[in-house]
Length: 173
Image 1 (cartoon, rainbow, N blue to C red):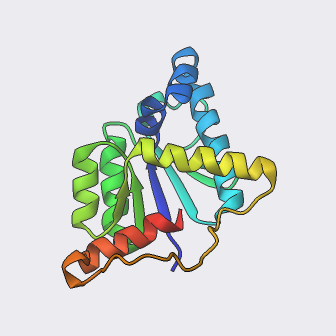
Image 2 (cartoon, one colour; image 1 turned 45 degrees about the vertical axis):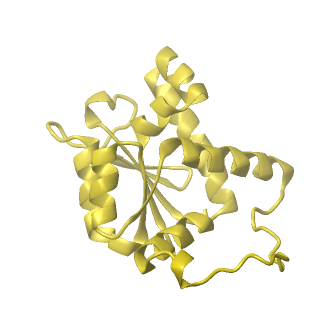
Protein backbone atom coordinates (compact mmCIF):
# COMPACT_ATOMS: atom_id res chain seq x y z
CA UNK A 1 0.00 0.00 0.00
CA UNK A 2 1.57 3.31 -1.06
CA UNK A 3 2.03 6.04 1.52
CA UNK A 4 1.21 9.68 0.94
CA UNK A 5 3.64 11.75 3.02
CA UNK A 6 2.13 15.13 3.94
CA UNK A 7 4.73 17.55 5.30
CA UNK A 8 4.23 20.75 7.27
CA UNK A 9 6.94 22.62 5.35
CA UNK A 10 7.77 25.56 7.61
CA UNK A 11 7.50 23.36 10.70
CA UNK A 12 10.12 20.98 9.30
CA UNK A 13 12.36 23.86 8.19
CA UNK A 14 12.19 25.62 11.57
CA UNK A 15 12.85 22.37 13.50
CA UNK A 16 16.02 21.71 11.49
CA UNK A 17 19.26 23.48 12.38
CA UNK A 18 20.65 23.45 8.82
CA UNK A 19 17.41 24.41 7.08
CA UNK A 20 16.52 27.09 9.63
CA UNK A 21 19.91 28.72 9.06
CA UNK A 22 19.20 28.90 5.32
CA UNK A 23 15.65 30.03 6.00
CA UNK A 24 16.84 32.94 8.12
CA UNK A 25 19.02 34.16 5.24
CA UNK A 26 16.34 33.80 2.55
CA UNK A 27 12.92 32.19 2.76
CA UNK A 28 13.01 30.86 -0.82
CA UNK A 29 16.46 29.31 -0.25
CA UNK A 30 15.17 27.46 2.80
CA UNK A 31 12.20 26.08 0.87
CA UNK A 32 14.35 24.99 -2.06
CA UNK A 33 16.86 23.29 0.27
CA UNK A 34 14.00 21.31 1.84
CA UNK A 35 12.62 20.37 -1.56
CA UNK A 36 16.06 19.23 -2.73
CA UNK A 37 16.36 16.98 0.34
CA UNK A 38 12.92 15.57 -0.38
CA UNK A 39 13.82 14.96 -4.04
CA UNK A 40 16.85 12.93 -2.92
CA UNK A 41 14.59 11.00 -0.56
CA UNK A 42 12.08 10.37 -3.35
CA UNK A 43 14.82 8.85 -5.53
CA UNK A 44 15.39 6.22 -2.82
CA UNK A 45 11.76 5.73 -1.73
CA UNK A 46 9.02 6.24 -4.29
CA UNK A 47 6.36 7.55 -1.91
CA UNK A 48 3.95 10.30 -2.93
CA UNK A 49 5.13 13.48 -1.16
CA UNK A 50 3.24 16.73 -0.64
CA UNK A 51 4.74 19.74 1.15
CA UNK A 52 2.32 22.34 2.50
CA UNK A 53 3.45 25.92 3.13
CA UNK A 54 1.59 28.98 4.38
CA UNK A 55 0.55 30.94 1.29
CA UNK A 56 1.19 34.36 2.76
CA UNK A 57 4.94 33.90 2.17
CA UNK A 58 4.81 32.49 -1.36
CA UNK A 59 6.53 34.96 -3.69
CA UNK A 60 8.62 32.39 -5.61
CA UNK A 61 5.82 30.16 -6.90
CA UNK A 62 3.17 31.38 -9.31
CA UNK A 63 0.19 29.31 -8.18
CA UNK A 64 -1.12 27.70 -5.03
CA UNK A 65 -0.15 24.24 -6.40
CA UNK A 66 3.15 23.40 -8.06
CA UNK A 67 5.58 20.53 -8.59
CA UNK A 68 9.29 20.64 -7.87
CA UNK A 69 11.40 17.64 -8.89
CA UNK A 70 8.45 15.29 -8.43
CA UNK A 71 7.37 16.78 -5.09
CA UNK A 72 3.90 18.33 -4.88
CA UNK A 73 4.10 21.81 -3.34
CA UNK A 74 0.90 23.31 -1.95
CA UNK A 75 0.48 26.84 -0.61
CA UNK A 76 -2.53 27.68 1.53
CA UNK A 77 -4.95 30.30 0.27
CA UNK A 78 -5.15 33.78 1.71
CA UNK A 79 -6.74 33.66 5.16
CA UNK A 80 -6.11 29.92 5.52
CA UNK A 81 -3.26 28.30 7.42
CA UNK A 82 -1.11 25.41 6.26
CA UNK A 83 -2.29 23.50 9.34
CA UNK A 84 -5.86 23.63 8.08
CA UNK A 85 -4.80 22.35 4.63
CA UNK A 86 -2.84 19.50 6.24
CA UNK A 87 -5.81 18.55 8.40
CA UNK A 88 -8.09 18.49 5.36
CA UNK A 89 -5.63 16.30 3.43
CA UNK A 90 -5.19 13.94 6.39
CA UNK A 91 -8.96 13.61 6.76
CA UNK A 92 -9.27 12.77 3.05
CA UNK A 93 -6.35 10.30 2.93
CA UNK A 94 -7.04 8.63 6.32
CA UNK A 95 -4.91 5.46 6.73
CA UNK A 96 -3.01 6.16 3.52
CA UNK A 97 -1.34 9.27 4.94
CA UNK A 98 1.72 9.90 7.04
CA UNK A 99 1.84 13.44 8.45
CA UNK A 100 5.19 15.05 9.25
CA UNK A 101 4.73 17.78 11.84
CA UNK A 102 5.80 18.63 15.36
CA UNK A 103 2.64 20.71 15.81
CA UNK A 104 0.69 18.81 18.47
CA UNK A 105 -2.72 20.00 17.23
CA UNK A 106 -2.04 18.84 13.66
CA UNK A 107 -0.56 15.54 14.85
CA UNK A 108 -3.49 14.79 17.16
CA UNK A 109 -6.04 15.57 14.47
CA UNK A 110 -4.25 13.45 11.86
CA UNK A 111 -3.91 10.55 14.26
CA UNK A 112 -7.61 10.75 15.14
CA UNK A 113 -8.39 10.36 11.42
CA UNK A 114 -6.22 7.25 11.13
CA UNK A 115 -3.11 8.82 9.61
CA UNK A 116 0.30 7.93 10.97
CA UNK A 117 2.40 10.78 12.35
CA UNK A 118 6.11 11.42 12.74
CA UNK A 119 7.80 14.40 14.36
CA UNK A 120 9.80 16.75 12.15
CA UNK A 121 13.23 16.01 13.75
CA UNK A 122 12.72 12.25 13.36
CA UNK A 123 11.76 12.68 9.70
CA UNK A 124 14.75 14.95 9.13
CA UNK A 125 17.02 12.09 10.26
CA UNK A 126 15.38 9.87 7.63
CA UNK A 127 15.95 12.58 5.01
CA UNK A 128 19.63 12.94 5.90
CA UNK A 129 20.15 9.18 5.80
CA UNK A 130 18.44 8.99 2.41
CA UNK A 131 20.57 11.87 1.12
CA UNK A 132 23.72 10.08 2.27
CA UNK A 133 22.63 6.77 0.74
CA UNK A 134 21.57 8.49 -2.48
CA UNK A 135 25.03 10.05 -2.78
CA UNK A 136 26.63 6.65 -2.21
CA UNK A 137 24.19 4.88 -4.55
CA UNK A 138 23.00 2.48 -1.86
CA UNK A 139 19.59 1.09 -0.92
CA UNK A 140 17.86 1.82 2.39
CA UNK A 141 16.24 -1.57 2.85
CA UNK A 142 17.69 -3.23 5.94
CA UNK A 143 18.94 -6.78 5.67
CA UNK A 144 16.20 -8.95 7.09
CA UNK A 145 17.38 -11.84 9.10
CA UNK A 146 16.86 -13.75 12.24
CA UNK A 147 17.76 -11.92 15.42
CA UNK A 148 18.70 -14.53 18.03
CA UNK A 149 17.09 -13.75 21.38
CA UNK A 150 15.54 -15.55 24.28
CA UNK A 151 13.27 -12.64 25.13
CA UNK A 152 9.64 -13.68 25.13
CA UNK A 153 7.06 -11.57 23.35
CA UNK A 154 3.57 -12.43 24.42
CA UNK A 155 0.25 -10.73 23.82
CA UNK A 156 0.92 -8.38 26.72
CA UNK A 157 3.63 -6.61 24.72
CA UNK A 158 1.65 -6.43 21.50
CA UNK A 159 0.67 -2.95 20.34
CA UNK A 160 -2.86 -2.10 19.33
CA UNK A 161 -3.81 -2.67 15.71
CA UNK A 162 -3.83 1.08 15.03
CA UNK A 163 -0.37 1.49 16.58
CA UNK A 164 0.99 -1.47 14.59
CA UNK A 165 -0.29 0.03 11.32
CA UNK A 166 1.23 3.40 12.17
CA UNK A 167 4.55 1.77 13.06
CA UNK A 168 4.52 -0.18 9.77
CA UNK A 169 4.09 3.05 7.79
CA UNK A 170 6.95 4.72 9.62
CA UNK A 171 9.14 1.64 9.06
CA UNK A 172 8.57 2.03 5.29
CA UNK A 173 10.28 5.42 5.42
